[in-house]
Amino acid sequence: MIKAIIFDCFGVVYHDRFPDVYASFGGDLEKDKEMIEALIYETSAGRELQMDEKIAAHLDIDVDEWKKASIGTGHFNEELFEYIDELRKTYKVSMLSNIGPNGLEAYMDTDVLHEHFDDVVESAKIGFAKPEARAFEVAADRLSVRLDECVFTDDRQSYVDGAIAVGMKGILFTDAKSFKNQLQKLLD
Image (tube, rainbow, N blue to C red; front, side):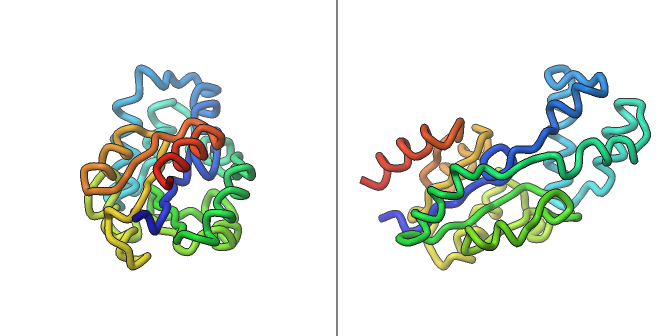
């Protein structure tokens, strides 16, 4: 029986402009994909503290220019928030985000998150990043549910696969409508 729904942040609950900003400085996301993913992962686990500096150096721009262009330029997925609020009447609802040591507050108003979620788990603060098993285990533990009682959604297949590997149900997020349909099938 499903008791909890756990959401990713960036690309699901919050849409940032990283791809657009990176491209605006001449970055090639496809060519640099491996480097960017490694930086994001290490930052999210709290092991890399210089992500902005490394991206700026790679793009050959000033780090302050990168930060000014990339931080605070996103928006919340309001359609999804409406659905989350409905889910919360029946299920425990949480967010598990891969985020660096500066935390979510460096990118958004975290009070908004606490209005919609029972818990918010930030990877660098727990020392484990998706798709590490321990990240999913901590998220479930903090909701006092078993892994097999959780559905996890993320816009990255490797993170969904990590959740499935520990016993959660997983849904690859593409948009709110598709997510609602897939989740309803799991809940029925």
